[in-house]
Image (cartoon, rainbow, N blue to C red; front, side):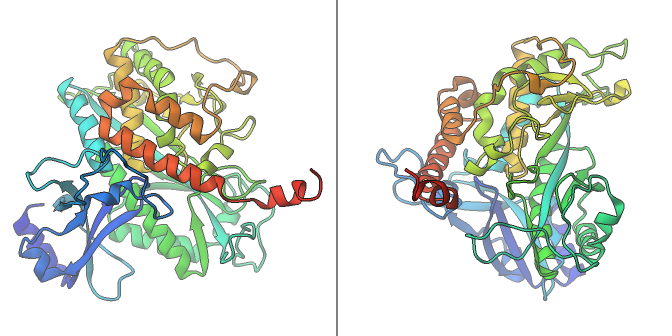
Length: 448
């Protein structure tokens, strides 16, 4: 959409305000709200560069060498991507939301901005004549309002007046318990042109999965970013919470963001993961080999929080290693059965709490390295991958050490992104260690 058509769009929808959105390292929307007229005058809004080193708790890591951001606490410019303009469905006044890229005063991109990181990886693919196609599947829980964090979360009350207590995977009736919420969710998503495909009830109590149609990675990252915001808002309007925590309840399955991915020829649209015989091509096996080799180095992106690693346990419908197999949901890398044109791999490692821009960039970076290095995948896993050993990091501090020392990820994702992400997540980990849990009070207080 051009600037002129953006003006027309504002007039058509009688826009009075604009939300200028920027996804930060954790995936939280940052930005400014400004009058529509001022926005259209071309006055680029600014934000402190330091928003990209802000933790989920609102703190900033120590930076004694002044290497993470400019020590002068400089501003960056927000550059609107007109293609992302959408209405804010729940706003009282006609309001537009636009996702922005970030630049320094000299016009160079901000290297640790998540949207810029994904754009950088996509340019690597373009230079090789490859076009990646993704399709995310995003799980989340509906939970009762919880205003005291010392109390565990619980499923919300549905139309029947009762809480869901059992596992209701794929149950239509269990989804219908929250029909008013989901109807409004679909209405709001339609107003924002979010390409939702199917909705299913997952294994957990009041756990839902939304599938997106396959498409361009940057566009889908934008959609997932906006979808999370939308679902949280809709849930609040129905007096409950929607959470994308990876493991919100101890006795329920975790929530993932599975990412289906393939590579096509941009000229012909042919799927490069399938050979002339319809079977997996050498490029496909190299892509899987890259995922197997490099995913441990991007685990702070796929599992960015202390809570994330509670999901990745044996026999929990979540992976513990990076085996691959055909239609094998115990593997970290699943190859669904289908026609040659739809040959793809499903990365089942990322959690629902992952930043979609960084998660898509990271999985594509791993596959890219596999293809350029001509790696070879391990033999197919037959039977349960849970019979094997853990090969993924078991907790955040271990994952951060692996990422920090990865030369390959520094080259592909960028030195600045790795330095900032590691610093922010180490701060969050240290903050977590200062919290004494109810488990410790229960079992240690009078027993040790």
